[in-house]
Image 1: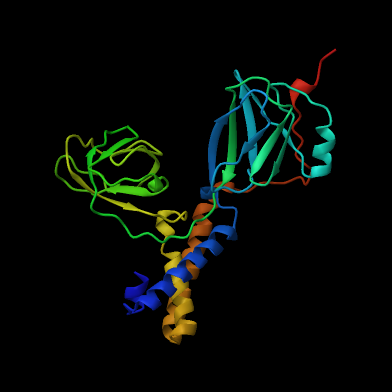
Image 2: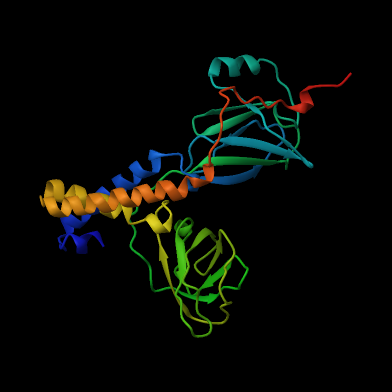
Length: 289
């Protein structure tokens, strides 16, 4: 799209535009604490093991809690190594966590879990990965049932496609897709994968439905043109100076960004903040007399 709007097919220029778009997306991703960057991940405790790796391609979690039976325990974060080392001077085991420490792409829970299989839930901010893969349009869907996450294709899936998105091509004929994008959670083999959410269209069965698999932006679909406008305004300001076009794409970018801010941060609402720190006490650390 950017190459067409810049009226060029030169490979060097297209590569430059790709670089500019990736740089733009990185700036957009860190511009605000966007709600669409956060995702929930889970793993389970291992008896006598206190250290666990953070989910891949994420930054420091916003929150963490451990579910033991029907109860949820939220440990207090320790923010420096000195305090953590002092806390760890004595070896303690318990399924009820009181503290957590994040460092070097991992986290450590105190006390050390005494049993296995309790669920650890992490809310972490996803990292942006440069987009460098062309759309794949030669795979067909053989099975995808309404309300199911199970996907079967003709062939060609790879484990690296986890995190990519698939769009079953919309058509009014039977055994075709709904035209919406679905994120791929995991790939089992060349023909089998699992989606992040359930398929919402009419079921596809024993078919060869057309589809597109793409490496997609973290930015919501309605605003994924923003890096295009941003890269073009830079291109027409510097590489191929054209004041009119630079101003045109600058306006498109600013209008789109303002709309994204209005739409994607609206859920925050109006909050009256007393300025007092939020104090949530663990009831398991207190007794009533």
